[in-house]
Length: 293
Image (cartoon, rainbow, N blue to C red):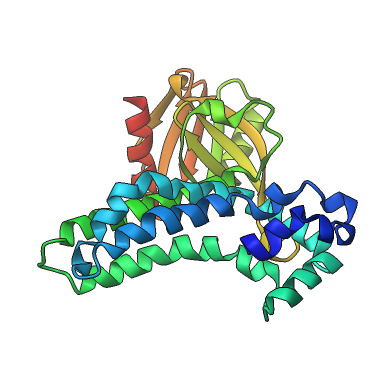
């Protein structure tokens, strides 16, 4: 892909086949695939080869290189832009010619999906290795490697949702690390509100997608898109946010093990939040507690 497509975009002999709108879009189309390729080719593969005789110790390779695996997050974040560009130009003569020269049965988009598939495959491989390495020397490293890879997958998944937030006028990066995201039923109970509104609010919950950052929690409304692939991915329209410095939490709401409360400015605003399961609630409550302490 890097030689037969990406490099060809800079090849003067192929320039006449590339439409002007596609020129200079190489970075959008391929993201940081080259960076991923070099990491595997020059670093990770060589490390793996050191353990050919001792496969049970392979967890070490992952732990030593865990920082580098974050290059996948960058690739996945760029994927929606890449896909939308590909859809515009998928029938371009340039791509057809590259595919013909490479003698590929599949078109470029199948290959652009490979890094996304690869990062999700590692956890399966590690789980499988753990199954057969219960009491041997490297088992702890394998377990730690699996936990780290699952952490990276969670970060990739969270960031894919985060880039779909629309209508937030600040800079999301300034809110600190994204810790959790998920969909909830939310009821509001505000002191300032009109009593009628308050009574009404008790009955019908709002569907909200929450993004918990280190410095703020964002409430968004999820919009499902119609379309294929990433176009079908939801987008989230920003509604409001609460600064974590002024937030308090009540862990238990009587009558429902899935509910907790987030309140603001000494209970001036109260949000009753219902998680899909008691487990999800527990995870969120723990994470919020960590931020608050």
